[in-house]
Length: 442
Image 1 (cartoon, rainbow, N blue to C red):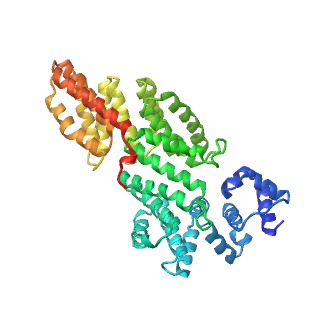
Image 2 (cartoon, rainbow, N blue to C red):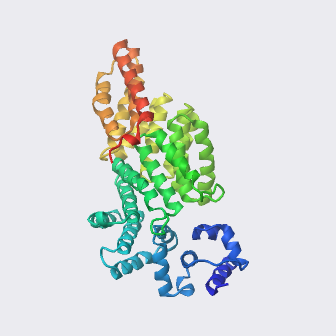
Image 3 (cartoon, rainbow, N blue to C red):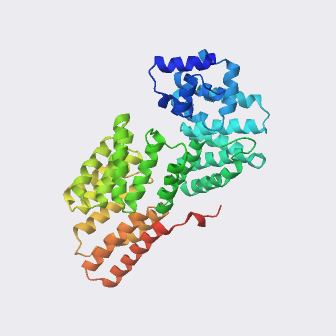
């Protein structure tokens, strides 16, 4: 057994780390660790590097030359994940910068290192700096091999998603998807399955935002078919996938499937003790029970989601918006008005969120006075709110507005306009499920 391998095994036993946990950090199977411990195999330099990062003993386990060599070997976009989790000081970015300086500007390895550096920045939410790196790499795109082109479009997908440009993000991710077959086994290189998982996850995220619900389910469930997915060894990625799948099932009224996923996510989130994760699960529970029109069960979950979130975040906005809608739909109008006033006090001047709560105010007025004429409220919803929601791809909010106006106009005897609103609602519902990724021009 190699001396380095013996050190890794000793650290695992001394720190009482399970074979499964160490294997997850090294992107290998627990069986390989078992074979090494029995003297029937050995770790590769890349695997030793990942183990060293996991235990935080790089210098004690490997020389600087070995570290650089291992960096070159595992610089296939796995490295950013390892160091984001295990190296908070950012040592990997410094090492990547050194490697970039050692290589000719247009060499394949130099571009790969630059792509890794940009990916690290984007994943660490240094979006402006990451975008600058990607702007520089755009000029080198034509000279990149298939592997680097894949990582370029993978990064661009992340950048567009971070900037909430989901249509552009989806196009970039689809281009990366088309390149997978070209780069697998290209010059002996094979894309790691965890990166395929992340790509499908990003595509699913864009599809959910754009209301391509069927396609979201398709790409998210494909992750389950990748060889290294393990139902028993759950990661943060698995949690995000299940939450997004649950959101998709809720929007398509598959509530039983959604609840099954959320129950599993809830256990994981409580174990992780992260308020953001707990908040998202609670929010999804609230949306699920709203879909079932069980307002009494929905409200406690939405309240919990608000408690777990910070003002100004997407989670806080979404939970507060759904709470106002829940109170309105359950016809508890005084409480709905109070919550709406609180929401407007927080988000009344927000560039994106303010329109939603102004629209909810008009919906609340119509709901309170369903049998009375509300021309100003109807005009606002049709001329202002609905075009805005369509621009933001919030088609289910569009559908809700049309259905409310349909019921209201029927109540006041305007059957013709009521029928038109109902038809618009049905058309929107079909569009949510009929949208086709294949129709996007790449």
